[in-house]
Length: 120
Image (cartoon, rainbow, N blue to C red; front, side, top):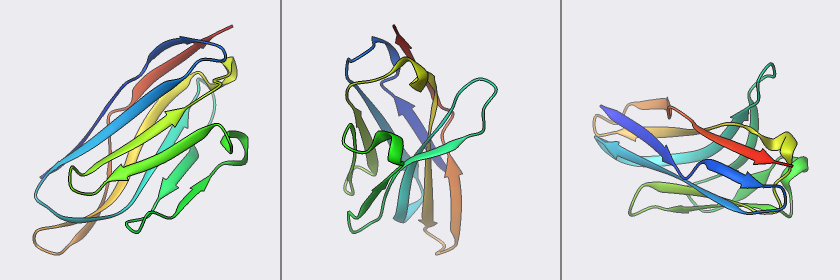
């Protein structure tokens, strides 16, 4: 069994930074891509940032230049550094990963989410 556990959410003032972490644990052989999504109340879940096993990254246009996704392959952890946060970015932030488990099967996993609230 594999689990993704996010941390680092909280309340921040507009313009401030916040760093999210997501640690994967369990019967992991390797992790392919790792993503961060967010979902605001009444809105669809959207992809914020993605990073491959090789370190290639991609970002939603709305966060380019302000957010940075990184990963630690040894610790099976992905990070999202968020700078200059805006009130409209208040949302639940979710970690997603495609993981090859020890049986060599591939599954997609989600974390439970962490709340980010940006006050104006």
